[in-house]
Length: 294
Image (cartoon, rainbow, N blue to C red; front, side, top):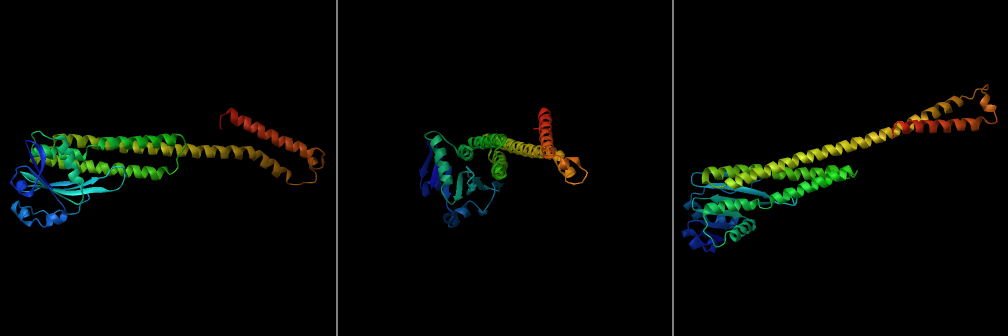
């Protein structure tokens, strides 16, 4: 696809007009770009696009070259990948898919029928990459808050698994914003555009850092809740052990079976010992209840 930027905004055009237009935008797939040898030679585009797992923008003598790895939201664990040549008078995108064209269409609708420049498009295009990120970070924050509420209610099922996925997702976007910060700084230094982009990326990275800290706090709450549950179990075991310790002593005492133990031949010996045991249990439970041990 070919576009031209000018007084009427962003308009589709053909190859001939694109080559003659100052402020042209082109989108190629990898096979098409591999056949554009004359175009690469005309603009001395010696840098080849390559597989990349991060965003970067490199400055060359007559152009900027960048590879971009845009994370997909909603934790789909996928990414949109494309490369871009930013020349003095035009932009060239290389991608497999339609992500760049969709971004261009969004920018085009916002800039329809008004004077427009290539510098404005560069700024608006990269801003479009971050268009819904603040909303997505808000969704992540709400999910963490829901996990915290569940932990406080005692529901800790699969907490580690869910928190690990959450922390990975936040870390993925935090690293992405760090990389985009470098991209924005390069645009500001080499093309004098992207001040708004730089400010937004830094704000998003700060928000992602806050989410990382919030996730750690919720994990601490979970650990505290587990500790409380373990303490409750230990308290229960202590109470049970303490209650039955005197009974164990009595059982051991009367289990010796000496001939001169009067209770062994007493008619009411078994009943009396049983009542003593019940009395001890009641007395110990009353004492623990009074001291609020359980």
